[in-house]
Amino acid sequence: MNNVITTYKDAPTSTITVGDVTYAYRELGPQGGIPVIFLIHLAGNMDNWDPRVIDPIARKHHVITFSNRGVGSTTGNVPGTIEEMADDAAAFITALGYGQVDLFGFSLGGMIAQALVLKHPTMVRRMVLAGTGPAGGDGIQNIIGTTYKDVLRGALTRQDPKEFLFFNRNAAGKPAARAFINRLKERTTNREAPIKLGAFQTQLKAIRRWGLSPSADLGVITQPTLIANGDNDRMVPSVLSSDMHRRIPGSELVIYPDSGHGGIFQFHDRFVPVALEFLGR
Image (cartoon, rainbow, N blue to C red; front, side, top):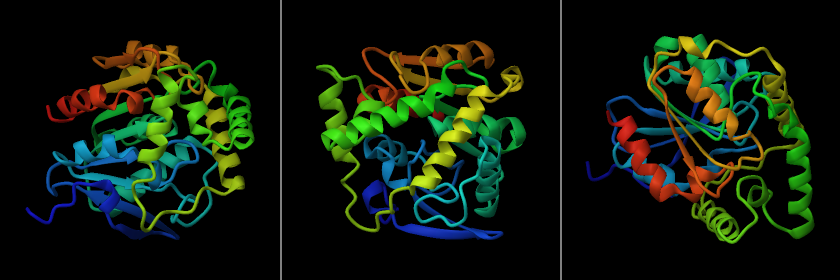
């Protein structure tokens, strides 16, 4: 057991080919048991996961992250719908040889997780949905305007747009944002290329389409579900977390105060023990 990798910055990048797509992925933590598949946010590649969330979970669980089709080191073109992204994730999981997994979806990843569990219910044991919302969720359709505005703010101030999109611009949020961005730089080798503009725009449109689509019947979800967010999410309105909690039977909800879309990263020290307890049941 001494050679088990438990720090994300040291996890090697592997590839697996499914049809005409070669997926790049990283795994760490103890092998065996049900793996936790992490589904990344809009524009995110594998380097965008907070090591303060990944590392402690990987001390107890087999963790797998991957880049979506057309992003980072994964080949192919970005799909135009969340449902296609969910099919990709299912194909990737199946190719790795897993019949059942836990899902940890953040933002876009949480939308993919919902589409996946509805389409492939036997594949999912339990899931964490953070900073996300349901199909047809009111406010999700505004994501393009919000995102472009903050990408521009980031460019003008030479800051990462995530500092604006994920965190409140106040005394609590600003230092949390800087700390988060610095943590993302801890990995120094084998980093992935940032998303290309066209791929980014395709993902944005897919999220907007998800927001404008008919709402799904979340009442059929029988998997234990943990829902988490900050109380002031400007990207995917926080009220949608409460909405999902009402609609997914037996789900649990944690909302962190004075925080935004990246509430689980700002409050990683409080969130991770909750996530570990949930995943370890």
